[in-house]
Amino acid sequence: AGIKLPLYPTPQIIERARTVMGRIDYDPTSDPIQQVLVDSTAVPSIEINPLQEHWHGNCWVSPKGAVRNARIWLTKTINEYRNGHINSFIYFTSASEILRASPVIWDYPICIPFKRVKQLRATPDGFEPVSPSTWNCIIYGPPQEHTISDIDKISLFHEQFRDIGRVIFNE
Image (cartoon, rainbow, N blue to C red):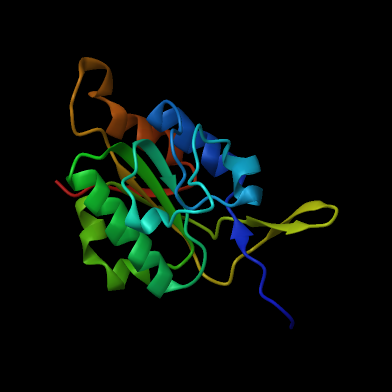
């Protein structure tokens, strides 16, 4: 089968995330291909390991790989969020096992798509859509410092993602 190329999130999901958060300030999981798709304001420099640095602003997090890697990135995302380093986040993964492996997920609004979200594989001729072998989930960490304009960010998340899948909130 050769090397397993990473799958990237589709612009459709990224644009919805941007609408919910207002903008994407930082993508700690970026690589040169993902940066083209996400177009976040900042990405980690090559010299640093983003898992060992503090993040900032509104973060788009979409780690590649299986549940072990997804869990490492989720733990870091939630630590940055709970400690006030980041304002909000949207975390996208195809490692659906994360729902069992990291129950902390259920503390946040989450969208579980009705069907697997096609992802993109980079080829020499551009991107090709691929249906991943697993299903996906999208987790939202809304702004913690509530301003009037943020009041309905959770409703906005619901509005942006409800046609893709079931949006679940834990009261």
